[in-house]
Image 1 (cartoon, rainbow, N blue to C red):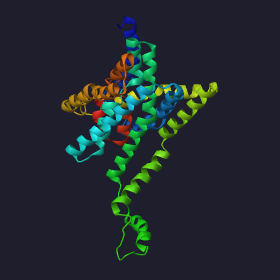
Image 2: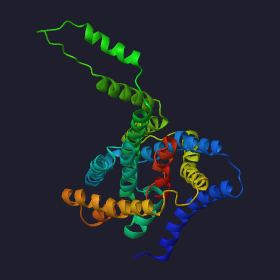
Image 3: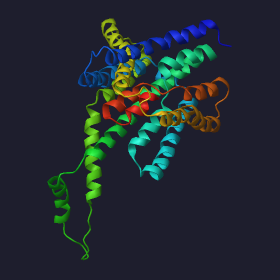
Length: 335
């Protein structure tokens, strides 16, 4: 039974985020304080600065040696099920459009566990449930947000990238110069394979210099050191990171409000798409989680935590990335 005190704690955790969103909306819609270029700059700041520091803080404060293996495996399997299901659907309906796979994965599998989920599950099932949910937050920051970035980059290259003819020729020339055996020409590198390789190389280079990649790797390394030998960051460093990271979610919600104000309607994607997004999130997400949860053998509180977190509203971070790469931000803003 959730008490009034628990309800208050949930509201205290969530309402400030919507205050930030509403203020941003008003600042553009009524007060005209920001231009479109400035709004884009704010979102870039969030994607490249605030979110990486938030990811580092979340990952580095979680003990990697005490992860619940069953819950982690169930969450991992749910994301994979969602990815393959969406890949099949989009292959049939929209000829394999990667942008729809990205959007569907964000809606169905990446809940707002950090701010909304933890106080709700703590109120429903106690501190143990909140601790379990923190592990899912870490998994999202460590694996799934980076996978999203990879897919966003691949999608950007696939739409916008054209391999220069000279570069393709340079790669194919050494192969054509090789001697032919048995009178048959073996064409090792095809234009299609060359283009795929160039795309993957470009994406790899971009991810290597992406602050989110650095933050997750450093967060995991420091967490491993910290909980193995009981070390702590110097207070000055810790407080510096905390101050900047704590503003990450607030700035992300502010960016969401700015985007909503720039659209003709608050429900930017339209009512029909909004209903579909809700169905994917509140029905598809829990259903996809139930399958691996039962198969792996989750029981009791562990099972309930897995299902409830899968039904939480979509997290704000996927919207920030969607806006940065311009991949259906209207749908994700509604979600």
